[in-house]
Amino acid sequence: MSATNPAQTGTAQSRGERTAPRTQKITTFLWFDNNAEEAVNFYVSIFKNSRVLATTRYGEIGPGPKGTVMTIAFQLDGQEFTALNGGPQFKFTEAVSLVVHCNTQEEVDYFWEKLSEGGEKVECGWLKDKFGLAWQITPDVLLELLEQSDEQKSQRVMKAMMQMKKLDIKGLKQAAEGQ
Image (cartoon, rainbow, N blue to C red; front, side, top):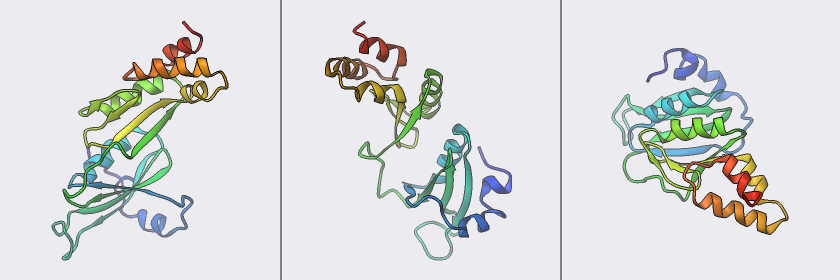
């Protein structure tokens, strides 16, 4: 899947966007071997309010062949990220993951299926996408149920969550109520 208009490809309009003052102080930087563009296009296709901001290419100097993608600045649901084709030296691990906060079971189902496509469905709402990046697909109600003062209720929710792959809001609420 390849972006075709200037706002998606990072050409034309991107220069002004990249030189404008940033509203986000910290940007997540993701290291890929040589498939950053494919990964970015995959992510941008899944999240609303997402687009490629700018693409830079290797010149005469650099680990990548001249003209190939070096970095891609992009937004996912308004949050900025940068992807780098840096070579095979580093791989993603679960030590760092991206959390997708969901309000409904439909959102949980959508992101779980889309992001795990070609990847691996793990447990407790965690998955690895086809590029090896770890994601947590988390319904906000889980956090609310775990943070309440009733420790028994919280422990029942934790036990239920630990038995799930994709998180099920109805099952979490039932566990909270002791059902």
